[in-house]
Length: 162
Image 1: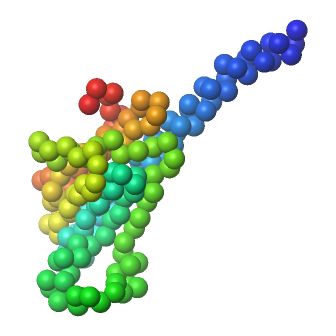
Image 2 (image 1 turned 45 degrees about the vertical axis):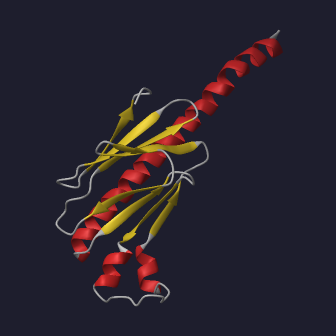
């Protein structure tokens, strides 16, 4: 009888525990992406250059780094030359954990559900603005919003209907 009770309790607790871990992965990933965007904003202001946050919606990857086109225009790098170790050190990459994906990127009236989505952070503290929604297979989602005037980053839970 005791074994039957243990089996029944395990049947209910196991899936709940696995779901909680999946939701924890999503929350952690959302916090890490928000922190990466805050890093991009602070680096753009400190280095007085534009930083880009590149969201690869298909691969579930976020890359933060200086705008390479701007560096080329200012003569900091030569075309065709490989990145220097110094410029590579400035680039930060983050792969989302398994089960967490970038649902979409929103900029103004446009929505991206595949390909690349960019948010630019400018030297004056502003940004191009945008919203990124991360979700998991259990239907939970987090919204990361970047204000286009101030460049501030806000993180919050998102509804399923968005």
